[in-house]
Image (cartoon, rainbow, N blue to C red; front, side, top):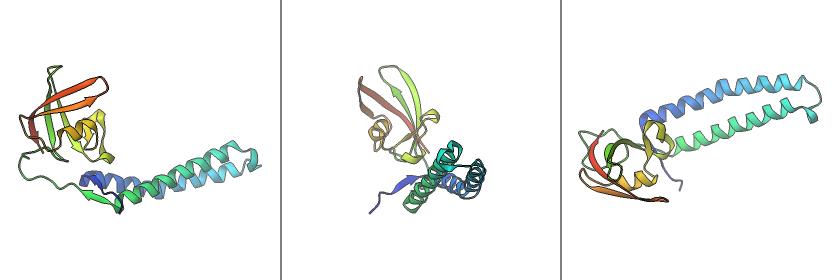
Length: 157
C-alpha cells in the first residue's frame, strides 16, 4: 500500500491547479517548441529539439508525480478550537532556549513544507520533535551542531 500524502485542502487545490496547468498550457507550449525545433533540420544535431524533448519529459514526470500524490492524499481536517497538542495543521510558537529567541512554525505535510514561510514538515527533525507535545513542554532536536531545545509557548490553528 502506498504511503498517504498529508496536506491541507489548500495544498490539494494548489496541486490540482498545477496539474491542470501542466496538462493544458504546459503540454501545448512544449508541443510548439518541439514543432519549432523540428523545423531547424537534422534532429541528430539539433540542441533545441533535444532541450525541448527533455523539458517535455520533465513536464510528463511532474504530471505523473502529482497524479500519484493526489491518489493518496490525506486531507488534514480543520481543527475546531485551539488544539491541545501539536499536530499537522497546527501553528506552534516556540522559544529557542539557547538563543532566547521566539519562532512560529506551521506544521504541514511534507509536500507543503516551505521553510521560507515557516511551514515545516511533520517529517522534519523539528516537526517530529514538536508533534504530540503540549504548551509548556520542551522539545529536543538532535542537530549536527548539537542539541536544540525548544519550549512550546502556544499552539493554535
